[in-house]
Length: 405
Image (tube, rainbow, N blue to C red; front, side, top):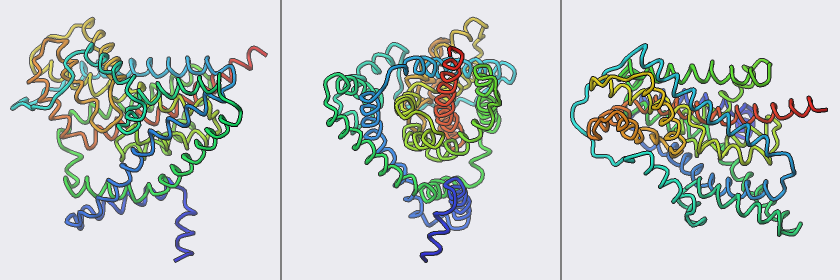
């Protein structure tokens, strides 16, 4: 048993995750009645979600308290990359929706609550930002966790003693170690998640609403494999694919199955450490990316909104499509980092075309039907690009420093 355990831990985490994936799919097909297996996935995701807010808080406070000068340009670069690529994703989705228009069978209505307008979204965002910090950690409100961590981090840098800063740094390392232990359980968590998906829907989960799903996934793959590496190449003038494939392998696979950008934060932080990036930078940029870097969400909002518009016979001009891209970008930045978070913003985007909420909510229902694949690919794109653009921003900063020497 000891030798078997050593062989298992000797395998790379990605290989172990792939083994868990295959076993979970087989068990889901052969013994779908063994529902207890699915608990492994629930426990794993719950553990990640529970520890991630604490990790983000202590890491950001520790990083800012110890931060040296010169990180500002990196943050400007990575925030610019996050917002620009999200807008590019929305524009790509507009173009694809015009080339391959999709019409939905909108019968019946859903009663799920959704934000009514962009102003409502940002009003809620501002309110959530100043939530009680302890409550924010309990509720996994990352906007507030980031806000208060930044406040405490700068305050500690200005007023804290060297001993106090060392204690906070030690706390960050302790929490990071706890997270590493949780991540080691990823293969079993993925096994449970895949089992539950296959047991509930069989292999047919990958064919329902095929055309719409193909359009969504096609746009997301185009962003991941063409748009993002092209932007990386423009900035660095070097082959973007080795770094891209590493991020997709190390971050995208786990994000695909957890379906939560928030839950994938610890895995992205571990990846950045493995890439040798500056912890003072990535400990802030990664949780920030989980909040505002939402390429997949922008694609989902745009494609579903235009599908509803095409179904309702609404004529969409180029100017209105451009404005829709801006709305989708801003709305995506307010998307929660949990499974299905982007779908509830579709009625907000549809309201731009004057489409009633009860019709738009039918598209949300369709989104949840295909969500087992759509939301998985969306999260994989969002989360892997957090690490990808964090690395890109740091490499670009190094390049600029070399030019000035």
